[in-house]
Length: 288
Image (cartoon, rainbow, N blue to C red; front, side, top):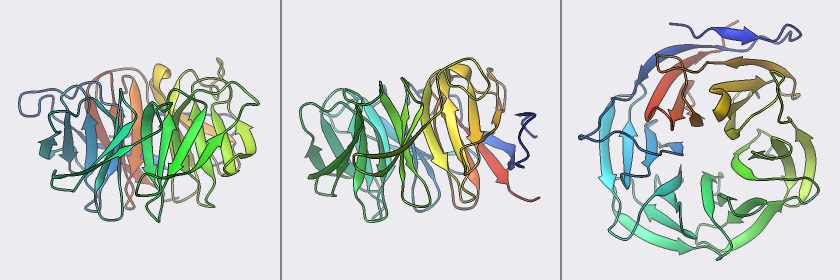
């Protein structure tokens, strides 16, 4: 089943098509996914969800089938961000306190990393050498930590109103910060070095309402979730708007307040929806 693509009439770039594969079950051990904000992929190409209100981490295969889950410790509640490092360890950010929790891939608790008191952590990403990047929901930027929790740098800008919600990396190493205020996308070459601002909040097809997360695929295409418009916008490697995919709804291929997305190396796209409490999986086809 192909999702209908709403194509920009000015675009000459041919974006990949996506086809629906499956979605997560409505109930997992008797509980629906609740207030989920973030999604990760482990080394087995399993999709891993931080199930916030149920204080657990849930694993799915590339068709959306439930695999297993684990509960967090008694003093750990409401996970927000989630990422997986090179050792397949799971890094979770606490929704309501400045700390990170680290578990191994089987759900055994390993460590807690304290963050500065001024930080309210959001979504998390890991780079190739296991540095940790954290959205500061209480600030104007992103923190870079080493794997021991030491703060290395901050990606911030004060030249425009910014309220960061997500982040991702380009193939050249640039960091893209997603913001729900001001420019929707801020591109950093280095901490403190803004290379460009891109995307505005407005009513045009290429404008944003409430962007929350993004990824750059192997072809350099930028995919950005616009949560309040219930779709994903796509831009080419030069930042030109291509199209958007999806529309509001609860049927297969529709989106209802999507919040995060990730793609496997083999081209399986996962889209996590906060509004419906589900994970949908799609195959991305780059064939001309």
